[in-house]
Image (cartoon, rainbow, N blue to C red; front, side, top):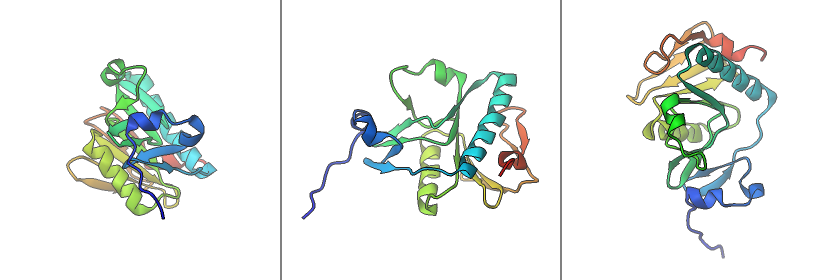
Length: 181
């Protein structure tokens, strides 16, 4: 006979011993191991981080993060592969706590995640404050862009990705995300 346990809150999750929480996210109050990504995933993630960081060096409007945990709801703490926060959010954050709410831009690189889990994560980011979510698909070298309005756009490697409302002047060819893979 199994016993049911109450879902964890973000605060309880953060108090777990590091060996129990490392590489995990809090999903609907459950600690979920996210698995180890392969080199293709890591190269694409690094390319995206480099592209966003170069844009930010020129424009100084925020900060680019990799694998940073966000407290999205009382029982949800997620860690996008790459994220971007505007400077005012970074400056106003409590340095001893997780960032509260979703990043302005959340980026996920698909490796082994189930489609239903990925869709739920995209919707969660948008419902909790993201102004855009990008999902990179290394195998077919495409990016899907999602907005809170419900609009989405599939971009192929020869297309250009822009995010004018959040990243003024940002424009990159999608192929740049997949260099080296």
